[in-house]
Image (cartoon, rainbow, N blue to C red; front, side, top):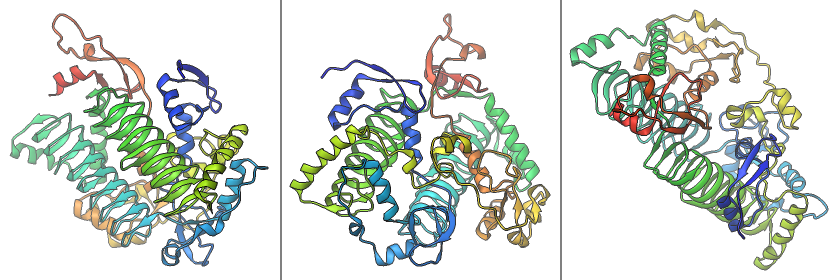
Length: 572
């Protein structure tokens, strides 16, 4: 059937969006109706099922022991400790039930979710990593999320195959001894690096590659001994840098402020798209024909993906990877084929409306199954029974206007403000409750702040071991939208790191620090703008550049935005 682009109104935000011709072709290929939510609202809905970073103390509903969990103490779901789960194993097939055609599918699935147990954390094959989530094959890590094959990481979000990093976001491929770094590949012994690759022994760099011993620079490649983008001799460089003692908080804060001002006046390429023909979005690497994607690598023929790698012929996903194909409306799906409307499906095929399934195929509406096939609501069927019943359920869902839509946000196992959706699509408590979603009011903590961060000694050399016993008041004091914990403590491995790297003690709580790093990323949306080279006396001969483009830099941003050609001419 031939389709034309169709303008529609999102049933969630009421804004216009377009379903394009090739979108219709994909929906027909996987046999689902077109979406009723716009791409952004679809992403928000998927993200609302992901609590990645927030941990709580609560009781195990099986053993009664005190545990750490991604589920709040007031959660209505049955939560079992990770140790009990791993030790005894749980056969979730015992919770199987018949499909009831007198009820909607989502009503039944909600009851199902309340009946089955849930693991307190997602930590696998790791040592001394009790206070983490979404972690595997790691050792001696603390308060990290989505971190794998790593060691000695503290307060790191998305670390991979790296070690000895603190307060970082997306540090990968053998990165080592980094502090306050964002989106760095194979960097080492450095502080405050943003979007850098193969840089070491440096501080305050942005968009640099293959640099060594550089300080407060941007857009450099294959350089050494540069200060504020000026080439110096080794002696000149060492003398200038020695004035920046980052062990002093006042000096460190001044350097952060100076670097921020430098970045506002620095040329930026309109988008970060590398080796990726026919692609749109931002932070795209080694992709082909990937449309409206952000933070993707090695994808082909995909649309509306965020933070995904190695997907092919897929649409609408948040987080996932490992050679997946024909994935639609999923989150955390890896090594999967023909999976739709799923939360965590790995090494599986032909899965729909399921959560936490692994090494399985031909499942519909299942939770927590592994090495299973031909199951509906965790009940076993023969191949013939399954293939006869699933089409009837789909027709039932279509009549109730359910089929083709991801799980409703009110079915999320987490409160909205504890999910990653709140980071990218922030809502107030009133807005969340008005949508019929769950909200978590922070539990009043029984502690007294023993020292305000502003009263901490300025220099790390003045910090005594007694700091480990202090409860420090966060500099934001809860007056922000970052889920501020208002107070925090310094742990021993953290203090050892500050001393070893000569860094002053932070003045904000870990959550506020995370949001500071999140602010280094551009929004996951695009604006139409023109190349700004004409404002910078950039030479084009007789004809000034008139190139227009879509960019992730909003018009009110202070950075100087260039098109690809002008950026290459100016920077390289």
